[in-house]
Image 1: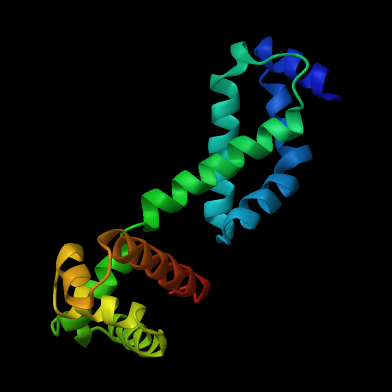
Image 2: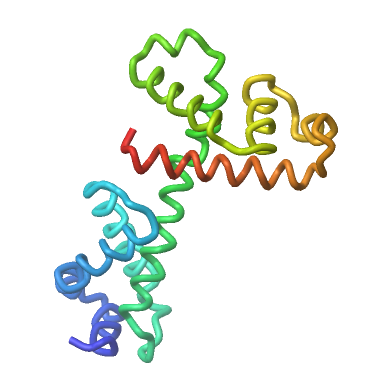
Length: 176
């Protein structure tokens, strides 16, 4: 079935077409999703399902000349980004903040993660290392860090954001 026929079937409300779409495009969508962010099979399947729901909900708005495969890829990519943001955006900030919290260090996984983060902070080059230590071990605000290190606050903000993203990527690639 070509894009135009698929779109017309979706617009008619033909629910059988979704079984065909899932069968035909699920492998492709899984690759798209995992190119954005490497996820486990269950999360990938959930995002594929959410993609199909989004297509179903927007069925009446679809244009017949639309490249359906690209349309699916765009929705899947956006759903993946939303999923990662919702589930994981605060995890690294929370774990770095826990560096000084000895109650949670008794838990083996947290202890291992905290050790990993400490090691990575030590390996980080200056001034990023100083910024991370002042932020997460000393609890200073970005403005205070900038003043203490003689940097512009925007630079501190950007460096913290980049380091958190770097740590987040490392942690999730470990499947912690």
